[in-house]
Length: 98
Image 1: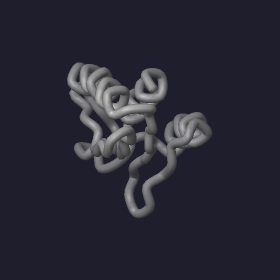
Image 2: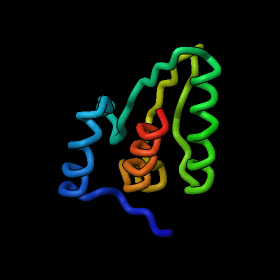
Image 3: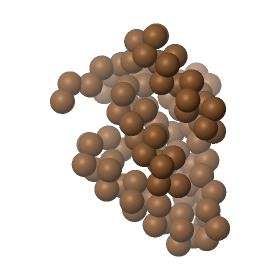
């Protein structure tokens, strides 16, 4: 699958919904960030496991860290130097699974 950086129009449309749902732009990078908070460590880790299955299937892996019940996520497509449709797709799946 050929992955390309989002055009300005694609980016504007895609980010409109995500920014309203708690995602933010990363200062100084063409990336988005969000912190997910769960009730327990097990819920956070279980969510990460479910997301990991999609990330592996789509060959698109997040930058993330977990501290107890919180998971901080940064999405960008390194191979294109910025946001791609894969980032939007994975962000939407993360929101759905949270």
